[in-house]
Length: 155
Image (spheres, rainbow, N blue to C red):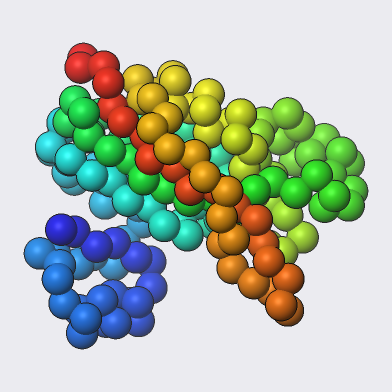
């Protein structure tokens, strides 16, 4: 099992807890680039994509790195429909209709349609989609989604 985080402190905590074959202080894209093609049986991204808006590259990499039948488990923060000023901000940033947006919290939200579309274009089927609370902010539950996708197409 390979663990990846941008934060050296988080890697130190993971090292103390143990259970990893390898730990990397790196960007998720760089970490995936060094993995052999079709070599991963499970790719897990928990509470990561709140820091990444456009997930196209992540899904493209998952398509190449996952073995046929491999699983891609991930969580996202649900894109809030009431995040004030959304239309103006989306128009200014060029993300209008993109299925993701940087929210007032400073975290990205994603729509279920966006994730489903990426999965389909990446040769994956949705095995599980479930509503979750990704965290609480000032005692307010922040809605999110957890997915398990299965790689179906061998190329």
